[in-house]
Length: 59
Image 1: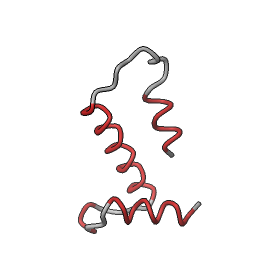
Image 2: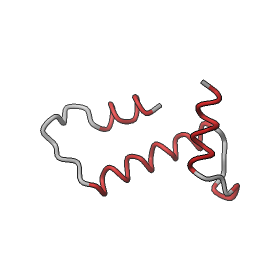
Image 3: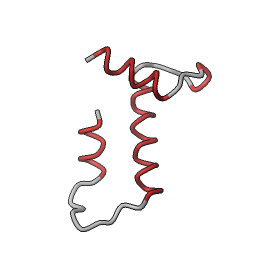
């Protein structure tokens, strides 16, 4: 997933300087995608670390 998100978001931007805030937003979007893939609601109170563990288990 990370490969798709980063490659699409950063396509043709070799000269861009990514600010910390922009990087944080991209990482937030990536986590949102993972949560959607796992069908997790924000009400489930699952931490990002737990989401990443579940994603790596499914690979």
